Image (cartoon, rainbow, N blue to C red; front, side, top):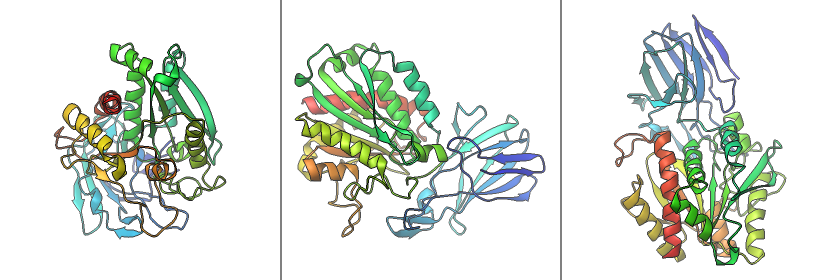
Length: 391
């Protein structure tokens, strides 16, 4: 990772999930920080969606930070980074409490975002959105593992040898056959840390003493993949595993050697189904720049509409146009581009959906979502999922 000294200002990304590209000094208080980005197995589809670095020696300086190299490619279509034009990154003085920058200036001619700040402390972290690392997940699970209604299994290992965790939450004192079953998946793409904060909110609520949560554990089984790409999260990646494969774009062309993360999760789901067990709803959680939406197969649109309405009416979900119908493939005519929701419906008719939540300013909130918003949404999401499948 980079550690660069610029007239007393040190810049580093030498920590879990840290990422920054080339750093240039324009003046004593003006820095240009390239977003490192990441490409796929074909060296295509460069994604400049994640950065996370620390600055030392900044107290009292009127800093200007230019985030550069935001042009990229998505689904084989080049772009100039304009989809990031409304980005409001976050900063922290302790790497725990995060605030959004008051403003960010987009320059379409140079594909650059300019940040201005006078730091109140000598050390400051800057990130695309509030990070959620393997360390965060470990701390959460360390605090929850003693709960009698939580069971953790390891379904496989990543390219880097990290465990692929599957959590099961239900009251074992109530017979399973009568229960509805909901599967959740978070963090298929490493940069989408907001999805992990939602998953944490969901897990905390599910294992709480809230009367609604107690009833849910009696009546439901929740199966949760809390971290679908732990390697990518660790190295500060964007959306590809160590071999360059998008972990939500290859579910119809999975290779166990090149994509062991998909293999482990797919096997767990299919073994559950093939053992004669039900899945009433499967949901994978994601982040995108400027939209909240639910996407799923047209054949189960009625279920998507119920969930959509519950979230729009009862949570911070801003999705005025209703759920979207998923295409047959993500990229027409190309094998190896099916997402998890598409593939599970295609293979086993699972009512599977993808949810995107915006990281830009939400019209419903009047600001970009915070960690607290995400955690609160996680609890509301659990309630909405349960209500959607019992109607």
